[in-house]
Amino acid sequence: MDNNCNTQKIYLSSPHMGGTEINYINDAFSQNWIAPMGPNVEGFEKDLEAYLQSSSHIAVLSSGTAALHLALINCGVSAGDEVICQSLTFSASANPIVYQGAVPVFVDSETDTWNMCPQALEIAIVDRLSKGKKVKAVIVVHLYGMPAKMNEILAVANRFNIPVIEDAAEAVGSSYNAKKCGTFGMFGILSFNGNKIITTSGGGALVCKDIEAKKHTLFLATQARDEAPHYEHSHIGYNYRLSNISAGIGRGQMEVLEERVEQRRAFNALYRDFFKDVKGVTVLTEPSTSFFSNHWLTAVVINQEATGITKEQLLARFAAANIEARPLWKPMHMQPVFEAAPYYGGTVAQDLFQNGVCLPSGSNMSASDWNRITDVLTSLFNNSEKNNTADAVSESL
Image 1: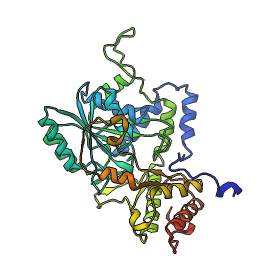
Image 2 (image 1 turned 30 degrees about the horizontal axis):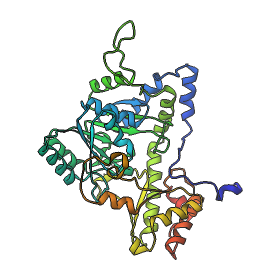
Image 3 (image 1 turned 180 degrees about the vertical axis):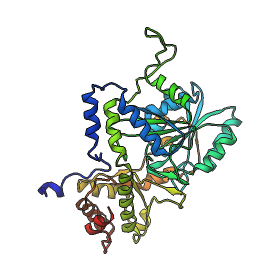
Image 4 (image 1 turned 120 degrees about the vertical axis):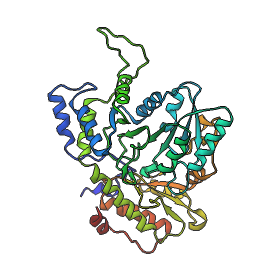
């Protein structure tokens, strides 16, 4: 092994190719299908539809953000409307609301899954109605691959006839009550960004309930060109279609998706085993057998009082060892750009951000990488027994 192997950077979540991606790419080159259409695009959409095992129709697009933007348009969101969004998430969950000139209304998380709190959601809807505001859509996020409490959230939204848009950008491969994430809401969002569980370099998909919604999505995604012998446009369109080359990468990635899910879950299990005897560290874990997380990222919360360790100390120690770790997402209602937006709930999201860390979780981490990670954790938490060795990793992965 290279002498630099002990100092090479360990990334939080790096791309992990399966090997067959190049075959689909070569096919695209040999057929000169380089445009944002072609056999790989159609094949990738069919692969995803088969994997989700639902009656959904998939439109693959240039990014998860593009998919969310088109979902809002499909829901009729326009200037002045209000859209409720989970606060503890990446900004891409909220930004498309503003693209439409609408107003984001942020809702706190619950402690079981760290996702949207159904009680806070209902309070927000009722209060907006009391102020003469009608919420046009709800965006719920499956954070770090952990499914949200979809039954409860849908029950609330359905009582008020509000469509739910399911941001499953981090949850490809996760399921709730044995149903794949991304298939619960009126629309679902998938992401294939470079750091996701599978990647097309950059890309995403919109999960639609019916074929007409997919057709309208593809119309908008290809500059909204009307049927005419010339370029005729009666709607504003977007350049949001995925290329046939990128879709080829996605087709190859679909062949290893289940394997990638199991690899991420195996590392999550190793982290849980490591921290089981460490007082004051909580690992985000499925609250019951109804939840199946891909564990895209393993996230922990550190109780400074119990451990004597801060999240900043952990991040600094990893950085010194050339290992990438990151804080949890900073809640949207705490972001300067959204400081004027309404917010409903308590301090769950804020507390998680203050004390939470995402740990290295890439499916392509090696036994040597795991040893370096646990060396840092052991030295920091003064854990006398190193429960997880390279041998344990080799057996688990």
